[in-house]
Amino acid sequence: MSDDKPRSPIESGCPDGFQYIHPVMRKNYGQWKFHEHPKPGVLRHVAYSGDEIWTVRVGTQRILDVFSLRELCDIGDEFADGYIHFTIRSNVEYMVSDPAKVEPLIEAITAKGYIVGGTKNSVAMLSHTQGWLHCDIPGTDASGVVKSMMDELIDEFRECNMPNRVHITTSCCQINCGGQGDIAINIQHTKPPKINHDLVSNVCERPSVVARCPVAAIRPAMVNGKPSLEVDEKKCICCGACFPPCPPMQINDAEHSKLAVWVGGNHSNARSKPTFQKLVAAGIPNNPPRWPEATAIVKNILKAYKEDAKDWERINDWIERIGWPRFFEVTNLPFTKYHIDNWRGARNSLNASTHIRF
Ligand code: SF4
Ligand code: SF4
Image (tube, rainbow, N blue to C red):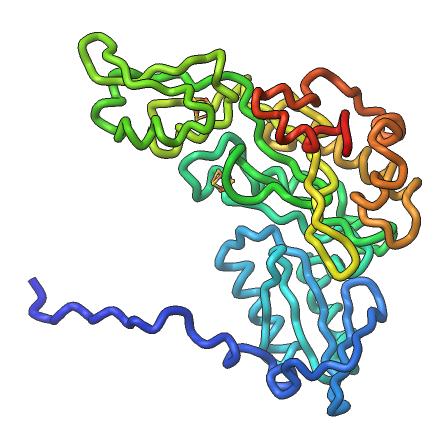
């Protein structure tokens, strides 16, 4: 055994981000006069001091292998003053203070097969959660859905042809991260969990599993002489919240875990209140590796939005103007009983379905 003492942890948390910011941005932090959009994928910010910074935005697949990362960093070192920045939607941004460096930078990026775009009224990169790669509870992949859809939407990322910006998200389980945007592709479980009673007593803390259920559908039970759990399937809303603390409550299913598409979510801003997304397509096959059914629905919604919305209307503004019945007409999506929130607590949440508004 080595006699070396273990290294003490460094208790300083995240490093100070300012040291990684382009010097012109650091100097003018909070002192920007205006910005403009010279062309898709490029932004120009001008500071009160007269300094300028040019940003070039590049789409990535988010889960990056080390070779791609090195390639992107090498481009930054050679063509972009040695700085690189990741956005919340998994884009890479390069910043240069000299406008003469913008075109060589774009040429270097595109020569390596990356795409420039995602600014202003384009379809930005889909943001996604972890999926099969990292998380322990996903019912679908997220990276795969994003890759398949962005392959189909690449022209909408490269160009600025939408009435306003479009943010699309994915969520690979029904309850946790992700899944709120202009268009959201979310997992939808359609059957209650199937319990492996042999494992429950070894793996699960039964009281915490019982406490997780939002509709009190889980009860402790003795099964085959062992402590286990049982689910009142009439009450269960198939949310999957019991699965993370108790993997023997298996809810993921190749056939019954579906995808659902929700639209119209938006944060509040200076002019409007936040809006919640609403379910518009349910029971879509969770069909890897290319998810063609879900992709076709998303493309269809985008096509209708592009043709029918007025300039500057986000998807929620457009639907607010035309109404949900017209939305279903122009997108050709069927309105079914699954769109109606018939949960017994719906008295308080009817506003969440598309069939009623007040
Ligand atoms: S959405 Fe759910 S399954 Fe996907 S990464 Fe988040 S917690 Fe995990
Ligand atoms: S899936 Fe949701 S509603 Fe059903 S038993 Fe589990 S926690 Fe309760």
